[in-house]
Image 1: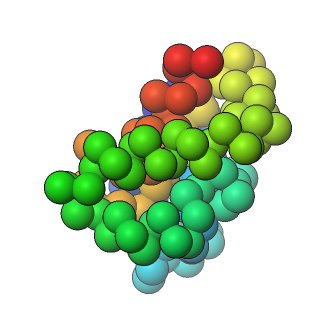
Image 2: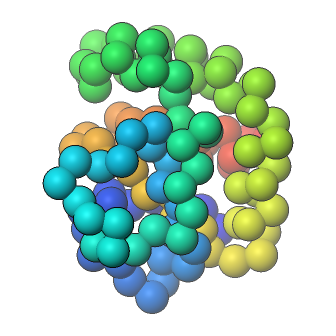
Length: 114
């Protein structure tokens, strides 16, 4: 099972393994506070794509398309996430304010469809 959660929300027992899927460490958050089991920054969007998107809602659909293309080259990381999710609950932890339009949402879609 794959869940999504903002890194700034408190960790819960039901989160299972918490995996940070951001290229940059979340601002203003100490590592102890984040309660992250694994930081998988290489599965995050490229720096260029992240900067281009800038969390602008009008760019969401194109961001989804471009990020999905990037993920095609990260099969090993996707396989790792699928393997972990197959063993128990995995929570993809993200920093974005917009819980509906961020890279973790796309990543969860990709994990569920492949």
